[in-house]
Amino acid sequence: MRVLVTGGAGYIGSHTCKALALAGHKPIVFDNLSTGHRRSVKWGDFIHGDITDPTAMGEALAASRADAVIHFAASAYVGESMRLPRHYYRNNVVGTLSLLDAMAARGMRRLIFSSSCATYGVPETLPINEMARQAPINPYGDSKLVCESMARAAATADGLSCIALRYFNACGADPEGEIGEDHDPETHVIPLILRSAAGGPAFTIFGTDYPTPDGTCIRDYLHVSDLADAHVRALDHLSEYAGFEALNLGTGHGHSVREIVHVVEQRLGRPLDLRQAERRPGDPPELVADARRAAATFGWTPRYSNLSTIIDTAWSWMNAQVTS
Ligand code: UDP
View 1 (cartoon, rainbow, N blue to C red):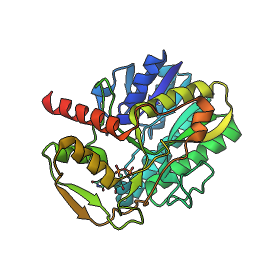
View 2: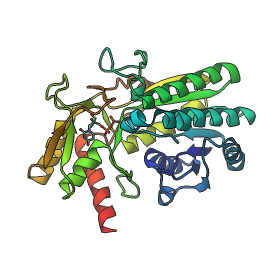
View 3: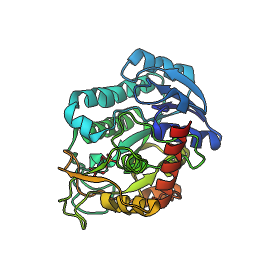
View 4: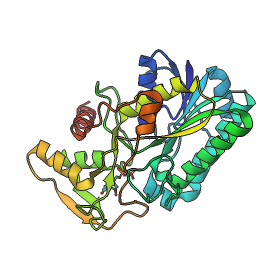
């Protein structure tokens, strides 16, 4: 299939382009390079443009001659969304609407949408399955929830086939070292711990008074290559599917911030330089996926998502960037 990948120059997008190409598909990246990198577009053509620009979006769809779209392009920092909510609604909601308009205008019906566990807010029960109440506690999660609602309505009204993949915490890097996580500024826990391990600034734990066994937040960390693999499987599934479906992508196991610190300290053989700070606004205490539906729907199981592999691949990628 020819697949237009919005945000394909970004972290999850570029790993998915690699997985698509390896599976025999043809990715075409559409990205404004606001946070993505031109050097990460290695598996197909590149079209520079912004999803919130309806003309550019429509032209890209036409030029790509795509059979399907995978839509990653979005602003994706919880903390930043608390400070810049209008930016998040514009980029994520208006951008997705512009894509849905362009797809409808061309009769394009296949969409994989990049959603998030942030749409659940603070869960009532764990692990979180897809039927759980969606009550986001930050504008990022809310913007993704609105996009899901728009895609669901378009499935009913326009015959769109859409699978929304609700990611838990993406992390790690391509095991072959071709691409990895490269955010500026970096706000994610694993790269920040590793930067500290490599001699960078002390690592700050946000919140040590959460109602969790060690007081720090628990997340479900999923290796980016497993996430990429799920997109390829979802795309194949979409060929036989009509309507809207949402699926969680996670491992079903949670790790606290202190646990990650501990694994890295064990690898290093010495303690990290740690600080403790207040809770970061917008952070729920614990998010762990029930991802059995994705496993049952398209036979997906994570292969790289144990903490050691995640940390080893992220560490190799980070060190290769420093030495290159
Ligand atoms: N975190 C932390 N220190 C940092 C960055 C993150 O303690 O410098 C915590 C954060 O509060 C959250 C977890 O690590 O509980 C995962 O945060 P991240 O930003 O990596 O992902 P998010 O869950 O926000 O998507």
